[in-house]
Length: 352
Image (tube, rainbow, N blue to C red):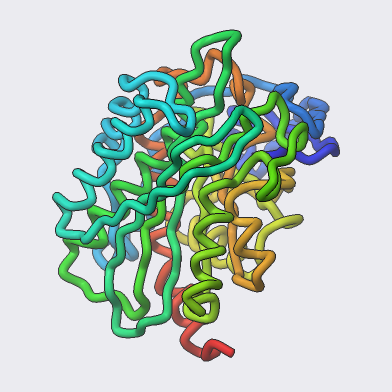
């Protein structure tokens, strides 16, 4: 993903939580200045905050909703980290891919692997997207997605617990819950795990290839296939998870490069089920990610990402100890709870 070359203020999470519960007390919060540049200089973080506490959904909504097991999602992250650094084309990523496919098949899903040779600044690399489909009452498709590769670093060992690992773990657990629920969804869902999101060069826009930019290889390949199969109109919406497991969870709205009504659907639902402290009404600056190729083809898309306030982005410290099972659960449960609202909106407006 690419951070925006703009700045924003970051309020310490612990003080924000206290302010939310003590409405009669005026707390003056220190403001920190965050600079998100167009290179891989890590974003700032005004306060480390405290680990994300367990958040209880609204009791009235619990019985009707699908919810994940945060411990299961965390185990998926742990497994990926155990494989080590997982850049595109590596044997470690191949092992990760085998693990993802095995899990999806164990849920009763038909998982397919789409391989191709990608031209990169460091030569051709074998890449592969993993796709599993859950048929619905309608053949129209909603894509739930994550990238599963990690950025290539030679300077240090980068295991990408949050950047690549967390979203993949959450998506696997969402796939399990939806596939084994016994409920046939109104729309068809595809769980897509993209290879090659990360750039091989140091920064997002440093290099070009004969086939395009040095990033988002998997999502661009997937969209290209949609066009070749004349399936663009079938894909009604795309939701991307990226960096969603930080123990100090705080998700801002990526309004620059996400479809506004999809943002509202997820953020409003999150607040309704008791997660408003984590889905906040501040702006998240991210100028590039795997949802952009979909937006470019007119597919409505949402990027859920904690970039500006994650101080370990593309750093050696992006390790398993930064990940919280509860954060994974909060994000996955909010997305799952928002799907009926999203389905209603899409079904009310047939594909053009």
